[in-house]
Image 1 (tube, rainbow, N blue to C red):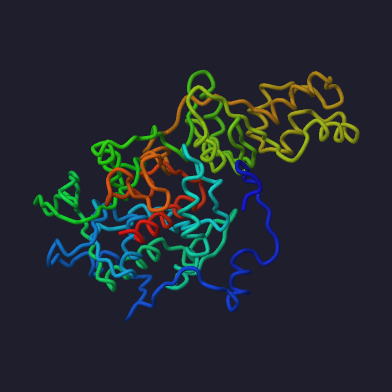
Image 2 (image 1 turned 120 degrees about the vertical axis):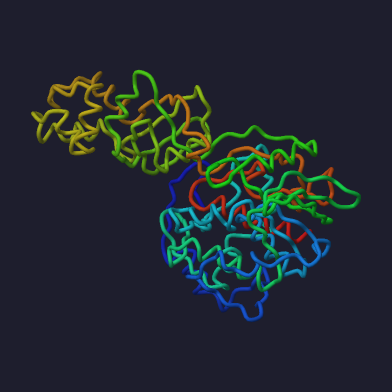
Length: 457
């Protein structure tokens, strides 16, 4: 677990979470019972578009206990967990295959959870809301679930867990194969146009193969995702359905998104395009230590994506370009040994030459270290350790990893994710006002919320 709610300063030693799990496996007591599915076969290299559950037609549309709108992480987990409980569901997916965002996540490798995920790494109007879901479905449950079906995780930076195969499609195949074996239906190329309350249940209008159909089910799950990456089929469907039922929406904005710089400073950032530095980035809400990346339009990189979730237009962010070191002390030490060295030459040893040259136009770079005054040392320290940036904006939903905001948690039961005033209607995943950090946290919320909803169908 991170050392504070707003820090990425994580330090671990020993065998680690996975090592400890495997070492103690014989003595562990499972908290989640995962059935062994008959004739289960994991085909990690198979074409997911040839899975039977996507080609089977409905025998009777009234046979379903629930309709799940959205075949992403939350929707797929919900379908599988419902199947374990003997519930039959229909998943409606707008794209031509399920798990479209899973397939592109992590550069096609899928960072499917974070070993140190806890409620403190999530942003919401109600910071306590996600605690119940994470108590019901933990990180260890996620690891155990995927290991059961052939996905062995490997830990990378800061607890990020990826499949050993580095193939996101292996993750999707687990769900599509399980859905097939459990008799769950997935309709792809199925665009939902509306949901209505009908008697004790719901009707769902869907267009598929050019034909509009009205499907009936006693319960409906909205797992339609958020607004990021519209080219992958992202829409505001979940939010529209929420509004139609009179639910409050917490303001939505792009999150985990690059930040832009315009005006007189744009050229300065553009000249550094491609330069990456390990930094501490912070504002009055959060602090992260990771790399930043200069681009021709502004700033990106993990630390910038993280802080973007806590930033609003008009606000400043601050960057320590040399964390865990004191530039004043370093200069004083160096000038005792080599006082004639020019400041530019010294900075070039700490940073890339390109960056040192760029930052030198804000410093007395033409002076040697011995001749620097206390006032000049203070200026250098301020610039290096508290570099101020006022972004003009962000790159929008096209480049955002996730959406911040969504269906207000005030409208949902934290224990079931059912809408309080509309029994039988559930919301999960990204369309809910629960937004995680970069690094597998949002997948953990998707799996957990899918599991929780399934227990209540």
